[in-house]
Image 1 (cartoon, rainbow, N blue to C red):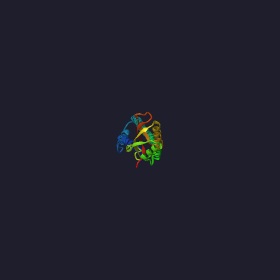
Image 2 (cartoon, helix red, strand yellow; image 1 turned 90 degrees about the horizontal axis):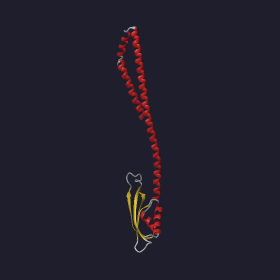
Image 3 (cartoon, rainbow, N blue to C red; image 1 turned 180 degrees about the vertical axis):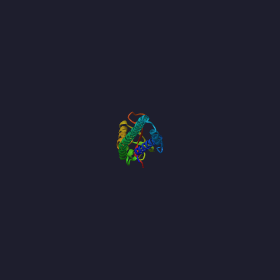
Length: 218
């Protein structure tokens, strides 16, 4: 049974209980009060009967109006509750739709990263670019770092950190090397670069390069 149906059943049960209590208190559990009133009514004189009858009708009208008012109050309360639940249902559906869109975008992003980084081997990758650019790299190290558990990509990707030295290199060649590194993989990015001048020359420098990127889990 749905939540709305349960709520309707609860309202109906309370209303029926209220009506039964009023009936019990007015006419008695076995109509004994009603019988007593009828006997007393017939013992009265004509004018007194008319007065009691008019008062009884007025009381009956008030009771009916009270019951009708209570009924509409319950109905209005039910309508307000239904409106709240429909609003919550609409909000839930909207959130579900937004989640589906974001989930689709996330999956496309993961596929793009996997496509760019799939099969990437860090050391051979940097060594090939260094040979192509005629750059000598030293102390090349890589460190694989798991992503945080609350990162949605942690089940498919891991971070890799790279560090190396490039000694006796000119600025144009260093820049070309960095461009080729970032352009070739699609995921590797230079994170930190320190350049120191060399004694006796203004054209060549020593550089310390740190980068990071994402690769598939092994």
